[in-house]
Image 1 (cartoon, helix red, strand yellow):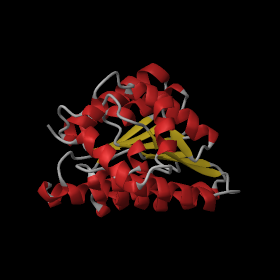
Image 2: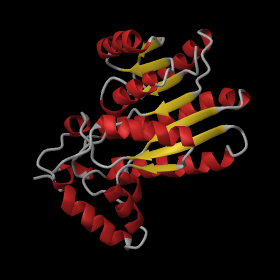
Image 3: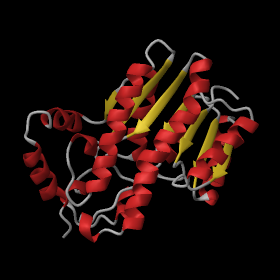
Length: 258
């Protein structure tokens, strides 16, 4: 395979658009998501449009056995990814005490544990080949506490911190790690998070395609943090100056459910 890129959560949103961007840059792809029909449609589209090889795997990455089986499957096929894009994740808009534990636990498993586990599985061989990229999809949520999305915001803070730490460890190996931090984006995220009439998601939001192209370029440059959009860059810097209580109050005002 020609510098293959592995993308999780590739059936919609930013992951879907990242697959298109990577294929356009002549990378073969390995895509994993829960919705097999969408993956197969995307496979057919990308192979026809760009002449790349696309392998698909249906699986729920909240399950540790599935993650190990997926890794074993790529090993069996002789695939060592040039890049691992940990995109799979979701949020939930509700107060913490009213949220269902099953959904919150699944969020932690996907947003944090799966991302960490897959990175640990694939990094040794990437280091051995002397080149590679890790792209972990975080969020501008990583920079502040998030009332009514407490677990989601905290999970993205973990992703940002984890990515910076391994990026420092990887210096000199030929492998880099990048944390992508988009703000609110047009995608299926809002539907799954049950976001309705929330100020944070009002206005002219960037498209998933815009974010994906920015993310690919940042990954290839080896940037440690990639905050999409000028306004988001300014806001991420501003969070360093305000007390955390004030940050919590601001976030609460923007995303309190109607």
